[in-house]
Length: 271
Length: 271
Image (cartoon, rainbow over all chains, first blue to last red; front, side, top):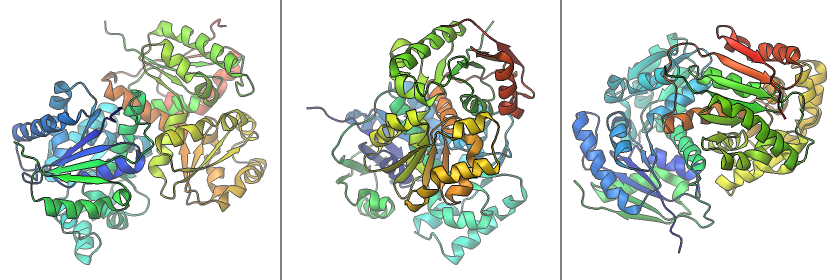
């Protein structure tokens, strides 16, 4: 019997679910194995060695499912561990930083690109490096937004408090001639509506999650590894922390993408 | 001395210049070798065997430049010869159909996608096949627009005649619930403004040229073949027909992308 190889998606916790959701939407034939390291989240304040070690542990766990690709759906883990993991496995490894950077370069006309993310991601300079690696002349405006992740995790997507936090964090970016703003954190797509209201209607918001799923599709097709399955795939979700909380957030975030799809939930020992 | 390997871009004529322009814009470090088969254009009315033979001849010519990738920047040649060329060379080969299809799947919310192209492209069903291969449930509305290429080649981008031709060709598509329209011909980006006026402001226009350049970038980076050059690349342009006419159209279409960049123009023997 032909066993369809899955796409492995890993994250420090729940943020990477936005990437999983986009992979389900854009590649409905593909099976997903997701690991959220909720017991050790967030990775943002941890040092690079620790993040790399945690990422290796998750990859070692997920590799038993014989994935055809690994997606590091966490900005911090992408910044610190992507190259390490690429060197350790012989399947494609995709992070969330370069897809967002590439999409912004594709869409900008002014050449001025904004990036918002956690303090860890912004301080690492990973988006600026990725943008300049491809296109040396782009002008990059970065802003750390430490208030945003807690708002999303509380499910506080559209309140007055959210609007005010976003206005105070990024309202001043309106004075720059940027025409594209990268949502450089997997949690941020939930705040996209309010971010668009604050930053103005003429700015392209670039979702790392959406763009990463797109690149997963491109690379799978280039390598002729795309699934041709005609039946609904059974996705598997694992977490290292409280499974009830994880399942409840995942069901809410994945929404209609898992309404018709069978899903398996598990809590393995890891680390 | 390290010689930077170029990206080879080929087309039946001038249409593929929109792809070259986007590759220059999105990947300014990359060197391009372009071949436009202007003496034998258009490919649209030719049979698949002939198109495949012509495409092979151009690839055999371009391979002397040791390209790191081949881009078939022509919808007809992509539809008929992509798989043949992929089997003949050991470098990545990218066409213009799957990138446009994938971008539309990424952007659509209604799941209803429009495609416009030449009669050859629309009749081949290549976009429908590419869309359904990735996402089996999308609804596709296709319309052949044989009047558009002559308008572009006359430089007639915004006249009343152009508006009327576009309105008569695609005005009726407004009745469908589509939210994304693929410009499935490399000439059409020049008509994008009028197409948007006719089809309405809420439809995403998907440019195959822009999306193909984006996938070229994704695949080069995945394969670690992206140029890190710090000097302006010298592009080379070849055509099989009248070099004066080709150069004049190319200079106009490539516009600011070649203002600062050295370019070499040549007419080789082929076929």
